[in-house]
Length: 350
Ligand code: NCD
Ligand code: ZN
Image (cartoon, rainbow, N blue to C red):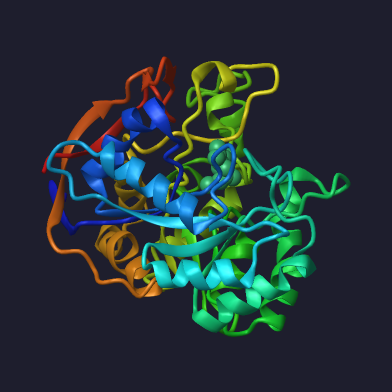
C-alpha cells in the first residue's frame, strides 16, 4: 500500500475566497496546499471591472500568510452590460484569467448574472478574439425545470448554441455534476475543459439526507449548487477525473458560508472544502485505484488549459488518518467544513 505521495504543487481552478476578515481566515488553508487559484468574482457587489479585480487581488495578496507565494488568478463577473472594452482591458491586465457566466439567479450571489446570453454577444466575441476563457456555471434557471435536471438541460439549451456561435472561445464547464456533462466535455469538439469538485466525487445526493451511518435528516452542509446527484453520476465523474483526459482538472468550488446561514430554514448553497481538499481528492483517487492519475488532474491539466506554466515545488501527503474539526473560525462567526467529524486517510505533511 502507498504510504506517502509526493505531487507537483497543485492549483485550485475554482475557488470562493470571499472578502475581509472571513477571507483572511480561509485563505491560509488554500495557500498551504495550492500554488494558485482561480478566484470567483461573486462578491457583493460582484467583481465586474478590471479595476475591481485589481483591488480585490491586492486585498488577497495582503491577507496571505507570511512567506506565502500563493497567486490569486482573478476573474470578472459577466453581466448583461459587460463591454468589449472591459474584456480587452482584462486580457491586457495579465492578472484576469477568465470571465464567469452566472445565469441570473442560479446560485449564491448571482442576482447580477446574465439574463439572456444574446445580450453578451459583444463581450463573448471579444473574449473569443483575445482568447480569454469563459467559465460557466452550467445550470438553466427556469422555474419549471427540475433542480436535478438543470445541468443536463443547460448543455442542450445554452452550451451547445453558445459554442456553435463562438467555436474558438475557450470554455470551462465549472463543477460538473452529471454523466451528461462528463460525456459532453469528453466528446465535444473545440476548446473545452471542466473542473470537478472533491464533494461531487465523494458523495451522491443521499448525503443531503442521510449520515454515513444511515441516520435520516437534512444536512445543510452538503448542499451546494449544482446539487449532488445520483450515484451513477458520481461514478461518471470519478471515471472522468481518473481517466487521464487533460480536459478534466481540479476545482474545489470551496464556498464558505457563516454557519448560521447554512443551518437555516432556507440554507444557502456552498460546501467549504478548502481545509481538506487535496486529502479528499487523494481519498477518491485511491478508492478508484488511480492514485497515479492524481498529479496530472491536480497539477498539470488546469495549468495547461489556462496556458500557464506548471508549478515547481511539491506537496507531500502521508497515510495519517485525521478527523475534520466541527467548525473553523470565519470572521466573527464560524464555518463548518464539509465532512466535519469524519476521518480522512490522507494528510498533507509537507
Ligand atoms: C457558490 C457560493 O457560495 O459562492 N455556491 C455553491 O453552491 N457552489 C456559488 C457557486 O459556485 O455556485
Ligand atoms: Zn463556485
